[in-house]
Image (cartoon, rainbow, N blue to C red; front, side, top):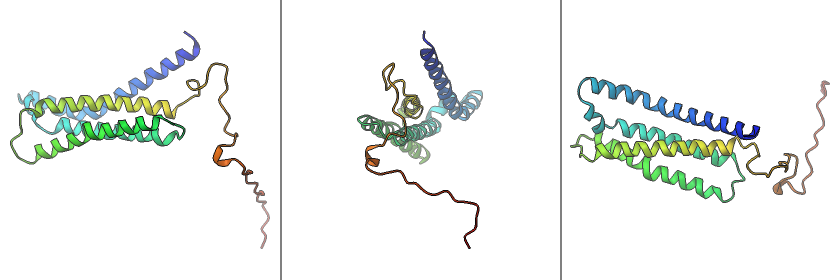
Length: 183
């Protein structure tokens, strides 16, 4: 394995561990609540309470934040912008909306239907998957070292090359301020 491949693999592993640390950090309070309910012999209640929907909502919000971060950080996304916007819409439609509706319905006081015990864990799994995807996409876009986009031996263009919007404009040359007072 080359030095570059080893570096990319280490970065990928760090990203994976960081992502799962974030997920565990979000889920920890809900795990404590579930353990207390298990201790009291009321574990099934966890599935009928809004806890899992709250966790799914938090992770969906974090995922949207990561997708937006990737979207605004790299302006040269081209055709990938639509894919990121699709993931944002998917997160809103598949997780955030249903989780908020479930939370409000459960807290509303009406009888909680049995299907909620199956829907909430599914929403949480989808939210975890979307958050993991969002972190990966965001890291690719914000930590681009240029190696993936440019073939071996080719150099990444330097930042001083004029962009199309800057073409035809000379750089602004301001005189340096001296220490003398002109009063």
